[in-house]
Picture 1 (cartoon, rainbow, N blue to C red):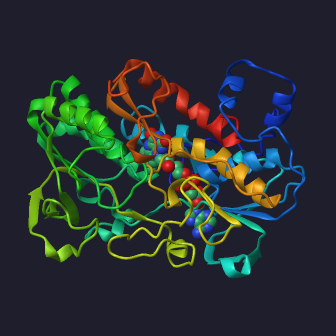
Picture 2: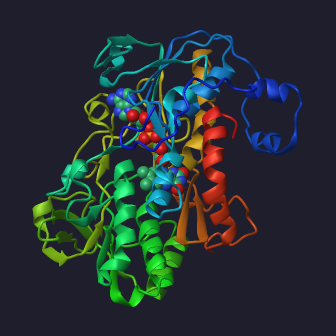
Length: 465
Ligand SMILES: Cc1cc2nc3c(=O)[nH]c(=O)nc-3n(C[C@H](O)[C@H](O)[C@H](O)COP(=O)(O)OP(=O)(O)OC[C@H]3O[C@@H](n4cnc5c(N)ncnc54)[C@H](O)[C@@H]3O)c2cc1C
């Protein structure tokens, strides 16, 4: 099994059987670290439910696999199908570290088959239409699939084409890069490695105007590139700029302020209220909308603003993102208009149950909830969503509540990370409360580079942490 975009890959095949179920593990009374991690759960977690229903999970990414693991463990009668087209599952936070030449491409990927719990069926197919009034959906190959309960987790759609002159396939052309794509991350790594040979240049890093997954990623790759040049004693030869659509680098403010200080001290020019709208890859020119203060809405007509054209030698961009079209065009989405172009799924922000269709749950990147779209958020959402789904299957009201927790480990340089953790309403939620969270530390780098990927593959996706 090889990554569709990579030949240097993990060759393992065959499904791994879980070496223990979480429930059995707890019933055996095992304590230690895993017990400590699980004890924070407040809902009825040890009980095995005898409820019977057909559950369909759309998307076998971080949220889909994690949900399937929790549900398979909580239910005695498991009738769960994951619909997922891709044979390869990537640990997407690793894309940043591929571009930074810390991980090899092969290190971030595993065969999907190996990650799906043995009791769960996998339909290798793509959903093209949702029919919630009929409790069914339509797939590209197998046609109609009926369900009793639906877990809707197809992640983000990346709309590269909304930047004029750019497409996902064109990444790399004209030295335009994006780590929001596996192949793009590899090309970006190669371009960064070529910088010393070019000896000088103008490097642009941009973000975008929509909600995105891991809002920290463009800042991480900007800071890592700057750090690499600085440590290679080449920094003075390069002009580095960061163009932000917003008027801050990050929320909550304490993290944004600290980051602004870091960018300033490293002479990275920050241009707020600039939105990348077009790139001429042949001429190496980037065109920005210059937004007024304050911006009228997140997505006003693009032609309404003055334009700024900036020449570049290297450009890293973030594509605008939205819910996949089949979600956006369904009755399950929040209304799509200029102020709200995402079409994210309309769920209750605490229970993650759909506002209208109470047999549907959504979490992860596609959920329309006011928190940051990260894997760290899914780690906290999945046990809550699973408990609420089981409650609904049993005819009970969903009671488990998600507090908006999300985390973004901002890599500020090789060897240091600022662990930004927060919840709804920008509440700070540091895992270690007595440490100032807005400080970059070596210990968080160790966790980011050596701890989080094993935790993802061997803990989170198995419903253990
Ligand atoms: C560059 C980068 C850096 C990141 N850094 C971090 C970080 O440091 N920390 C962190 O916590 N998070 C980080 N993230 C974010 C994290 O990876 C995502 O939030 C997480 O993967 C989202 O999980 P998901 O299941 O919602 O979506 P995904 O994992 O994207 O999975 C969605 C799945 O749905 C499938 N799908 C799509 N359409 C259909 C369809 N029509 N039918 C069936 N299936 C479909 C897809 O194939 C995919 O497998 C980063 C992401 C990127 C790209």
